[in-house]
Amino acid sequence: MADEWQDPYDFAVEVAKIAGKIIRRAAEEEIKVNTKSCTVDLVTATDVRVEKIIIGAIKEKFGEDTHCFIGEESAAAKGPSVLTDKPTWIIDPVDGTTNFVHGFPFVAVSIAFAVNKELEFGVVYSCFEDKLYKARKGKGAYCDDEKIEVSDIKDIHKSVVISEFGTNRNVDVVTEICATMKRILLIPVHGIRGTGTAATNMCMVACGAVEAFFEIGIHCWDVAAGAVIVQEAGGVLLDVDGGPFDLMSRRMMSANNRTIADRVIKEIKIFPAERDDGK
Ligand SMILES: O=P(O)(O)O[C@H]1[C@H](O)[C@@H](O)[C@H](O)[C@@H](O)[C@@H]1O
Ligand SMILES: [Mg+2]
View 1 (cartoon, helix red, strand yellow):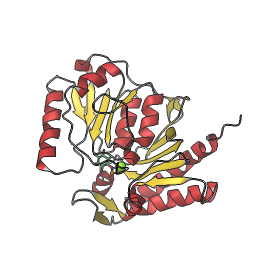
View 2 (cartoon, helix red, strand yellow):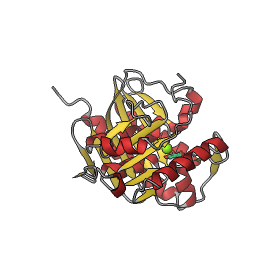
View 3 (cartoon, protein in one colour):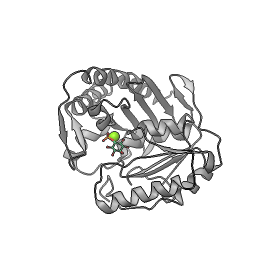
View 4 (cartoon, protein in one colour):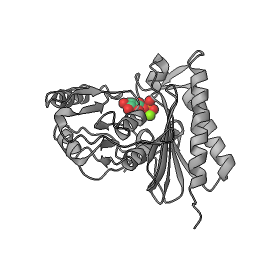
């Protein structure tokens, strides 16, 4: 049987690179910043423009009506992001918008593709580093065409863990996040890191630079592409309570193996986050 999704996969790689080039160029010009859910949840004219370009290119290539889209910048206008069985592109045009605004050089274009509610592939282009991460279900994960694998560390004391503070500035939530970070540091782990983009953080797990990355409050477009990349690199993808990963739950734990994941999970205090699909 012909490989039905190879063409969309190749196209996602092509489009991610084009989008990254536009982002790099936009970073040299004046950046127009707006806010979304709160004063620290940033969006720029580039986020909106790049999403339109990506979706426009996909529609032109594969037809207007055959594919569905969940895109960070068009999501709010559409209401809850419901994943159906139809081929669906899940897009974060600029993952790491705060980084982009401040010139902190970790910004990624994240493009995932799901069919029958299952993720088929993910592409993450870290555009200032010029590194392209990609994975197709069952076919391994790659960075710039080189196969990548998670680290084999099982001893938590030899691990590096990534987490992020996110954009929620509710005092109780910030207190819980800080307390969780403190508990993880005191395990002790070698260190806690964060690139400011969930997509890139997941690629750091996938290529063995860190052992785990978890976050509560991320959205489906932040983690959909990374989810395929981590799993295809041999890692595990879970809910922050250790249960099965749910793309719409806004909770995600990715790790090199179950031992590391479970040890980090022990220290996570979970706080509520409204689901992406409104359920
Ligand atoms: O930069 P965006 O696309 O908004 O995504 C980031 C999110 O805003 C932050 O709150 C998270 O901490 C990051 O992990 C996301 O990647
Ligand atoms: Mg994002």
